[in-house]
Amino acid sequence: MRKEHRFFERFPLDAHVQVGDEKLTSPYHVYDGTLLLVGGTVESAQAAALLGPSGLHPVRDTEGRALAAVWVGDFTEANLGPHHELQISLLASRGEAPPVVAHPLAMLVALVTQPQVRVVCHGLWNSTQRVVRYNAEHLGLDARFGTGILTRAGSRWQFEFSDIDGQPLVQGALDEVRRMPTALAWELARRVGWAAAWRALRDPVVQVPVLNTLSPYADTLEVAQTYTLADRQSLRLATESDALQISVAPYAALGFTPAFVQQLEGLRFIYLRPRPEAV
Image (cartoon, rainbow, N blue to C red):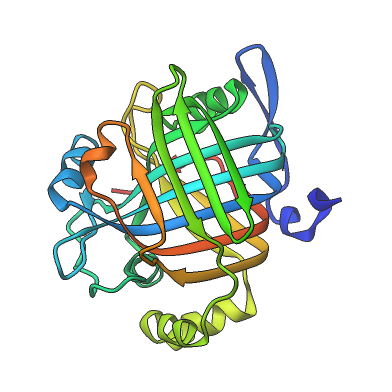
C-alpha cells in the first residue's frame, strides 16, 4: 500500500485531533494524487496589500514583480479521504528580502537560496467540508469550501473550481508536461547552486515551509514544514498555449502571469503541525 512507503515513516500519524464531531489523524498525509503547480509573478502593490495585514512583505524579482503560485490538486488517497484542492499562494518574508534575479524559475530559486522566504497559503479551497474544517481548525489556515475538477484530455490538463455559491474561482487549461528539458534542468541547477542541486539528486524529497495568514482561525503566524515526493514529476516553462484565469476577489486583481508549470503524479505529501514563526 502507498501509505506504507518509507516516506511516511519519517513523520507518521502520531496524534488524533477533534474537528467538529470527528476525531481525525495528524499530521496531514496525502498518499496518492496529482498536483499541478503554476509558478509566476503578480503585481507587487497588490501582493503587498494582501500580505500587509499579517505583517509580511512580498518577495520580488529584479523587475519589481512579486512571486506567487497557483496549486491545483486531485488527492485520490489521503488520511482525510479523497479531495480536491485549490491554493493561491504568495512568497513572503518578515522583513524586506533581497530581490531575486528576474527569471521564469525565480520562485524556485528564492525557495532554495533564501531561507527566510515562506510560501504563504493565502487563498485555499477544498472540496470536502471535513478537509475545510481540518485545515481551518487544526492547521490554522483560512480554508473555504469549493468544488473543482482536474482532468487530462489527451495531452492537455483542464481544471475549473467554483465556490460554495457556484461562482467561478479559477479555471485553466495547460499542456501536459512530458519531461523537463535538459537545458532547463542545467539552468535551474546553475541558479540554485550546484551543492543544492546535488542534494536534490541524492534526496528527491522537497521541503517547503508554509505560513498561514492572520484570520479568524489564527491570531498568530505559524509555519508548517511540508514534504513532497512524487513517482513522476516534470517541469517546463509556461507557453502561450497555457491558459489560467483567476476570477475570485481579491486575487483577480493580482494580474497573475504564469512563468512555469510543474506536474507531479503519484504524489506523496506531508503537512506537519504548525509551530509559531520566529520573529
